[in-house]
Length: 167
Image 1 (cartoon, rainbow, N blue to C red):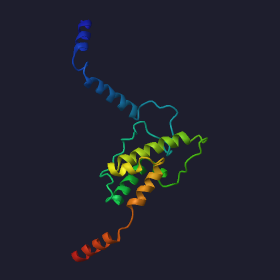
Image 2 (image 1 turned 180 degrees about the horizontal axis):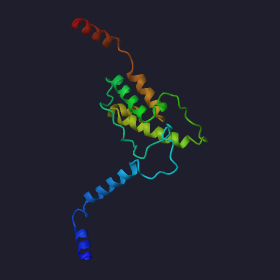
Image 3 (image 1 turned 180 degrees about the vertical axis):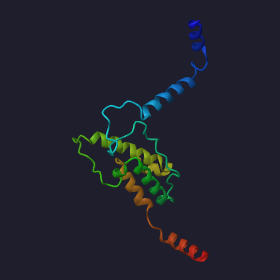
Image 4 (image 1 turned 90 degrees about the vertical axis):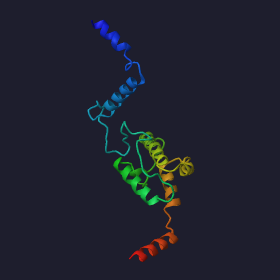
């Protein structure tokens, strides 16, 4: 009876389909990212160098993407998102780039690459092309700030006029 059961399972379409492998991958990811998953030497999760196993270049989503006209809203959304991941220190200049022989250099580089990817994925394609070759996330961040955070006096005047007409 057991051998018939094994044959039935082995030939069942679910177990031989891509859905089965996707299901196994989902279980693996849930286990890996679960707070109950076994940990080695409890990492310092308060460190800005800590990267959770589930974080990836696509794990941060900002909407809408920076298109040039929405910089202030995008900047605020990015700062909130990076703050929740304890990564603001990489773009505000409070964490200097470690020397090449510093023990934190590899951790800093990993975080820098991750932040740069998050920034690239949160801007329009045309803007991404202008910052893709920056070596550090902070230089990309400051380049965006320099180009898009400018105060537009004509826009301010138009908004004031519109406001005054409504009052």
